[in-house]
Image (tube, rainbow, N blue to C red; front, top):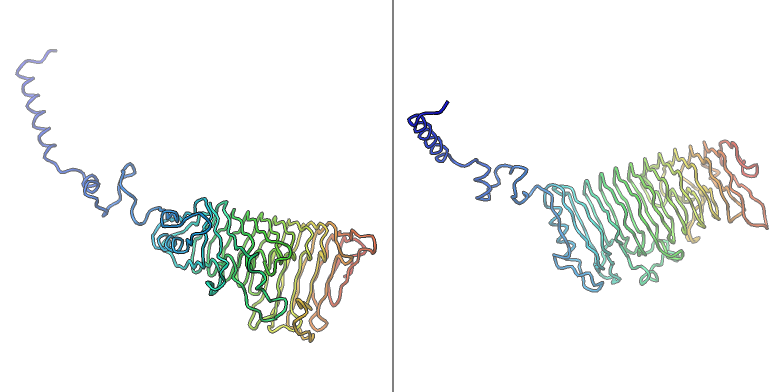
Length: 426
């Protein structure tokens, strides 16, 4: 039905009144804040406002003065980037873009207000001026929820300073800087990066908990001194996965106070093998327990899986519940060894007064070839024999022709099952 002209005029007037009423209302609160830059309330999800201080952010060292020319000192830029990332709430990223960045000592100290990721896409070069170092090269301490990742490299440039290492001649030698040191880090991940030619240890993990180390490449020449791949001490719940290590010392060394250490899928060589110890060198060392090494391959190393303690130990401690399983040996010297008379370079005292107890050790499904006739060497103390040692399906054969495969088991108590008859010494 058609409306009369009077009715249409009434509707038009009502519409004008409604529009006028809406025009007099204040704008919604979030829009006012967006215009004025206010931050008292969260912006809506479709807002174009800048993120708050507690949001995600990044600190790019190249925008803080670092130059990737391999010559310019970028130490300040890195320290500034850390200070910026660690000082903000939320998820923060310290960006190391592609390029070669020369640095002196870096000390990244927490606690941080949020979580920090160090994204290593470029290469860091540690200065060879030893006078700049009071301790280590890159030291990260008291940080929770840390991630270090990327395809870049931490190059210690150790080749230029290894001649300063006198540890082979002097028992209490001066220690050169370690490359990457994690102290008191909890819930951390290190993945993907390469560590190259450290001056001393490539990576040192101390007083850390709930750590995952995966897919690393760690490389130094076979004759480089004390260039351990990863050393762990006084730490718990550390997992190492899928990592390739070839150095001049232990691929992985598990020191006193370590518990709940799991190593899987590691390829080691060259180097001194995967070791527990050395134990007993210093006073007040703590026990080592619950160590699992599985699915690893060792290639042309000077030891395979090894437990080592000083005969003149300064501490009373116990290493127990150590489990090695599914290990492949390729031309390895001393594939399975417990050495309670450890004395590197023959510069320590050997008095037979061992204070280290080694017990409950299992070697299972260890196969391959040995470059020494002694495929199994259990060299335990006559005063503190090894107990609870199990050899299960050990099939490692000497590859030479001038001798036969053999086992030496001194002061070791336990059992042998399914081993080559030459190796069933328990």
